[in-house]
Image (cartoon, rainbow, N blue to C red; front, side, top):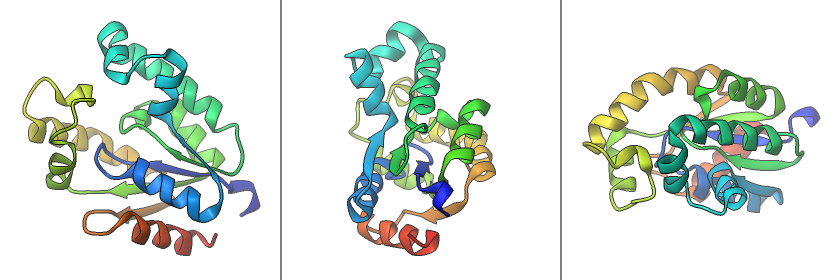
Length: 171
């Protein structure tokens, strides 16, 4: 297991990747990174602005580069953006450089958790439930494709999910 000390969290928006990632990093004494926060840090602008100015393709190119850079590190917990797995290159990097944990949640939980969040560009132009269903249809198979572990997050606290990940990965 020594060659796979990184933990990469994947899953849809609202699954709890950032919250669980912070908890996990804290418990394991590892450094925590959030790919969206890193994009914002590097660009000096929020994700919505990047989407507005560069479109989704521009954002995805930035995301791929950030994940490439972050996966070079050792001993980290990385919360990825929900759409990061669209890129085959990113899927390959995540899979090769750490344990990939798919945080699975229901559409209903996603809608509830993202309802008041105006920082989610993909949810701003349409009915959130329908948008999330369409995203799930295309992305869930990609999450499953690279997951070393699948953990349901719906009715569990970040601490409980973190503990489950630690126990199952043997950290």
